[in-house]
Length: 93
Image (cartoon, rainbow, N blue to C red; front, side, top):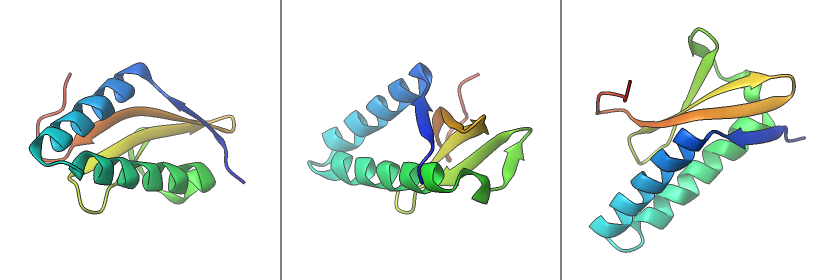
């Protein structure tokens, strides 16, 4: 059973920027990233407690091919996605 998913506005912006960058780099690459993000979100929604906490209550799931981590919390049956961060760059503050 999947839990409710809420993607915070900043995470939506980060996803859109990443998808646009990869699609502009090579046609179809943005779609591949989107598919990997969707697969990670499915894993999170179906089993949010499976992943270990990394920063206080924040858990991270990494995409397989692309260097991104999805940062989320799980509270009261709802998954909150806070950020999609590139693992090779300094995160925004």
